[in-house]
Image (cartoon, each protein chain N blue to C red):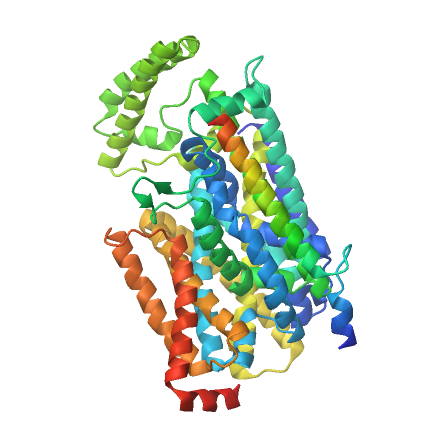
Amino acid sequence: MTEETQEEEAPLFKRWSVWYMLVIGFLILLILFFYFLTKKFS
Amino acid sequence: MSRPDWIVLVLTLLGIIAYGLYKGRTSRDLDGYFLANRMVPWYMVLLGIMGTQASAVTFLSAPGQAYTDGMRFVQYYFGLPLAMVVLCITFVPAFRRLKIYTAYEFLEQRFDLKTRTLTSFLFLLQRGLSTGISISAPSIILSSLLGWDIIWTNIFMGGLLIIYTMTGGAKAVAYTQQLQLIIIFAGMFIAGYMVIHHLPAGVGISEALHIGGKAGKLNIITTGVSSKGFDWNDRYNLFSGIIGGFFLALSYFGTDQSQVGRYLTARSVSESRLGLLMNGLVKVPMQFLILLLGVLVFAFYQFNKEPVFFNQSQIDLLASSKYKDSLKVLEKAYEATESARITALSFPQQLKVIEGQKAGYKATVRRWLKDIGGDDNDTNYIFLRFVVDYLPKGLVGLLIAVIFLAAWGSIAATLNSLASCTIVDFHKRYSRTTNEEKEYRLSRMYTLFWGVFCVAVAQLAYNLGNSLIEAVNVLGSLFYGVILGIFLVAFYRKRVGATAVFISAIIVEAGVIFLNILSRKGIVPLSFLWFNVVGAIGVILLSEIIQICSPKLNIRLRDKA
């Protein structure tokens, strides 16, 4: 159990949920950026 | 190819084999051979995941796809980051806790032996065949473009990597993938720089994007919605990318041993998670840049003469057919049209007329090719034709090496996973051997067997033509959703037992195959990405219904589980 708990610790942030939000947030930003490019150049 | 190109190509390939042999020394047991003793750091897990997913065709086809259809293909990857998050929450901790070698071992612990055997068998069947195709596809392109013998190209594409994969197992695969991706990225960046370098003075990236945008190539975000409503048959749009792409990525990374085997090699749960999450961060931008290369090549050909057809071997085929005289006349007229088009770039009205003529000539060549039974699709040849025609000596060899390395990274990981499933899910499970040294030696033999099998399939694919390639591609999309459904029930529907999930998997699989037949006949307009959604959700719902309707079955199986 101790080993599992140690493994669960996330690098840089306190919790893994912050990493998950970062990945999802970055995806949203990318989609918005792509939308901007589509509108600007099409 | 020139001598410097050959030197660069041979040295790069030999260097990778030597590096794999040097770094692949590991303990002589299954843990060392298939899991690199679970000592791989997160960044190598990341490169392993990326190297396994990106095959040679990824780097050949994607720029051509952007050139012809625009950049909307990038939406296909929008579901991937979301799938990485779900994998990190559910799949990774479960797989790591049980200390399994293959994803299918988990299914025996959760359900029963028959469910494990079925899914592992489906994986071996589908992956064994599709790996043969991933050897064949780039081999056909290289042999067509460079005039190489197809048998030797197949052997070099799928055979040489067996040396280090068989000797060093997962560790050799991980270390070579690391070096391969560095060379691949360097090669692609140099190619990108060279395209921009070849653009006329005063035309930079921004102008190239405007040119691409005007021609509809910057269609990065599309909704698939028209005045008639949502087009379910539209392959790449925001919704099919996020929803269909999510189920496809979840299935591929969560239930396909070629990927599961990469993150099981990590030092800990955290390192596995970090590798997957980083993949979620970098995959979409990486794919965007590869597609952007296609738009830049498109802009380049606005100022330079574009071949009437990018696959020269098909033009040669036409030149020896009943159309040989007509082709000569057409090529002369096309040449004159291209010269006129380049001088008329500043005159929109005139340009429009000339481009209409040009499109007519290209359509005629395609029609002739179709008529003589040739390949009328040259999308995969666009980028490599540019490389061969315009890149300086030495760089052509590097870009050809990139194609080989991309293929090797993906195939090596797959051979390792095919061998691991064969020995762990079948040989060891049914014969119950306990001699570690013997298992290790057998694992090497199975790696060799699958390597030879895949090269043989590649040769068969070349002989049978497009029919086998299409069949294998369809095979993958038909099974992925159902296999994912079995895993999702295992993780999230604890009260559903083995028989309920087994019966529902078979029924839904039959349903998906039927749906595919209806889709191909045009009765049900549904793109293949949606099959994954139908398969996964179908298994979850049906297994739940069967379990509710059979309470006795429920009690017995819950006890068993």
